[in-house]
Figure 1 (cartoon, rainbow, N blue to C red):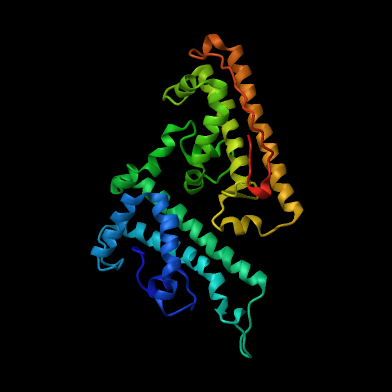
Figure 2 (figure 1 turned 135 degrees about the horizontal axis):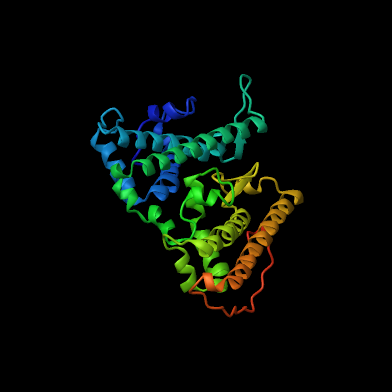
Length: 327
């Protein structure tokens, strides 16, 4: 835990009287710091922020650079809220020789479940927004954060056809979220390898990623392949519980599997499967229509060689409750 050090910093971001001892929260804060901050911005940039915070005596007031100070403040907001979200289930009970018990006396009683869920939702939303604001802040001030600009986390997307959140949002709504887009990157890579390259070929597909493509080639990319990839990515990520779809907009499933499976009814599982199946059909149709478009415009789209698609023996059925997805 290197970006937050005392209980007052936690209370500045989560204004509740949860504890007066930072040590009780330390494990959860450290977990949130590693799971979200270090993972999203990269170790090098994380170390720079941690060193700036340490050099300033572990106070925001001692940091002269306004952009660095703002970045650390946003980190603290995310860490405090998401760390407390992780701690809340343990804080709500007492674990001892008699097992797990709830706190209750004549003056207080446990909150209703809907009240607990509202608190969790609030902590999650504030934490989510803080990460989003942090990534926006870093991206908009790259000169101040060269370690982030050079990090694998930032440049990884450049090797894929869809290279940023705004581009992805054109084909499926993710709220222009850099956070959501980064969490989807490895799924994008997998869909390219498993679903797109076998159809279009690796060499031709590489040409689509070059700057300055135009005419029918650009039309193929923008109208067929990119939307196909987006649909297949959202289908896979929703079944794998990486994301949740809230009012038609994709968001990162910060709450983990608990949030994705707390409704264990058959209706919930079926709705996830139905949505994934529909998106899979749509995505595959975009790719097939793209291939048809390509074959009709070969003279205007140079460099393509018809691929021989080899089908393996393994067949899998989509199973949302088991997290299995086959495209």
